[in-house]
Image (tube, rainbow, N blue to C red; front, side, top):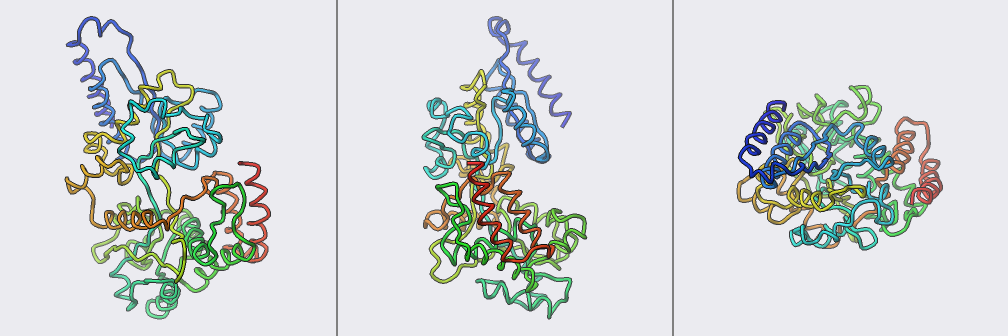
Length: 433
């Protein structure tokens, strides 16, 4: 990483020596860009920034990058102090936190001439719109999918689940054929909350949070069903219990870091399609990861599949160079040359040209491409409706987790938890709307 930065500085110095005297005499423009991620994303983004700088002499991009832990807290402080970066990577749900009326970030429609908006589907752009203002550009789209270790299921003499009945039956079969230590499905608490939510949305026809209004859309009966479906996933040996995960290095320890996942004792995962590479990377040679069918109840109007932009690019309201920041966002999100550098470090690109570049270069592995197509089919059929951003609002997220944690540890019954989800959920939504 350090070597790359040094090379950029040296290359920049050489380029300036050969630049016209007039250009050298002009003050250098500095653009701040903040993002989170891992080493691969950092390295690729720095290389893409170097290309953008080379294409825009006199511009320097100051990279402000880190892991996800602490990123939102830092950004919140910066926005409150009007010192946020010119361009920043954000989660879609943060629009509801920082730009409730569409005024928290620059309206990118004001810089339409600098953006290749034709690269995006209207539905993708709509995720970044608030009050008719384009607050953020979508980079990629991610949704929940079922991943199965086919080899583990074959060893357990169990067919891959195709519907809810087969999913619940798999828990009993794994316990009987393999043992108490084996589960057909692993996931963190939020994963299992969302899986239970999918079942209940299919059954009752409404998500927990109304997509259009700050209110709980689930009836009390549906909320009770949500809690009881979560309990059933754990109680019928389908999913790894939260206390068990907590005893093995932490309840939020990623699936791919779990030894039981690596060797196939935990044989599936309900997760974002964008993390497929992580889940696959640690499996030993005796395992085989495949995409499963999304379990759907007969007659369900909605798939219950939860999806939204993986990450987005937004321009700070206090930026002194919003046009340059918009151009950098456009370059990273739509430029074919940027795609060759960035690859899938922010997921499968939403921009058509970037997607085609990766497809032509065979940079989209078969499993990830299959998941992408499964999600695309759900979206095109209208069975993956846009959720409320308030569902993933930081405060709402903490509240829901707290409710389900009390259930997971036996500190609350299903009826009390469901009552909290409705009453306290409605009250919280009114406060954060």
